[in-house]
Length: 501
Image 1 (tube, helix red, strand yellow):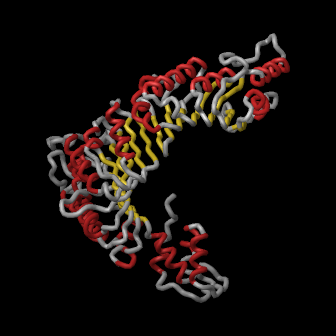
Image 2 (tube, one colour):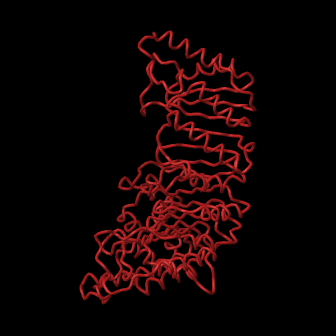
Image 3 (cartoon, one colour):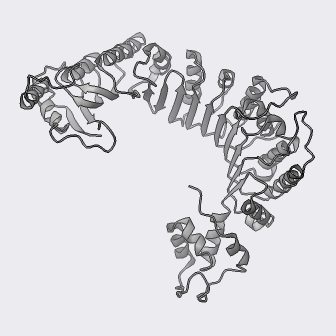
């Protein structure tokens, strides 16, 4: 949430902070107690930012804290915004500019040009050019910048001028070398922005990079004779940028919403010794097994790597410290599409989580178990899977548990989320010929008397899902906790818990 902005008239009209009680015309009329500055700082940290800003005239500590809140984040987007222009004007004062930590730029103010790329001789174009020049000058005073956000995808490529690219280059490499986090959204044709972030003589110290490749807005006019940039330019500059920061990068997040093959980028990345998290999302194209392996190799090559998220067209997976989380997009997902995932992760897989977007019926459940078993058997890793979580069954019966334990006899922890418990794996409702009491008696016996196979299971966790958010199940239904009582007889020595989720 963006911190509450201070009224600009308060900042302008306030000559200097005071440490004595204010007059009745001030913000507060109560006597200010004499407290150490350390305690006042703790009070400012505890209060919401808006409260601190409103009471900035209370004393020196409140004033300094409020000014840090007001100028912590600067947003530059529109030449006609009065509040924005006032804050940019204040940045000419270096003590104020040093308070800025986060700079967000959405350059709708770039000089307008016609279809031939010539500047438009309009008053608005002139004012925009002056605004751009003044903005680039004052932002160089923000020496303590930590985060830089560039929202470029809403601008046509030929509107990104040479002067703006030179400004970005000087900002990153000269004025603000302390920038650690970069957020960049752009289209393929705007590769010049990436080129501005690459230097032959020095390297940036980025630790977090978030890159979003987005298409241009559909209602934007064609750039005319300006030749579009090829994908190779973007791939070349992106590869250079990432390799330059390989020594310091801890988090890499790439999202692609355009049809571009980023395989050459991933193949050429190396030396990421500090990488902790890797996020990659591309649902515009299918990816071969080699691509998945290159991504995984990039993530696992770092000794500090702990989190890997891959969101592809066929499926989504999350790998975290040996845990593989698969999210198929549809109920009738193709298990063959998961083969590359299992083949790539099978070397160190011990925790598998599968979360379908809709609950599985019994046939889909059997197909899933068969597919997972086959993939593990092909790699000789049948005994490696120790934790299995299945988050989405329509029905849960003793037959479901039996098949899981027979398929994975070396499981130690099993977690199942389901909608309803049932006697038969394919029968959802109680038959009309049976009373409710008779049906529950049969349900109890089906779990209590079932002869489950011998396994290494140590913990079983059952979670019954509500049929719709906020709706409490009918009181006539048996709560899931009764299953733990039934199963404790047929699964002795297993820690069993059952609850609503």
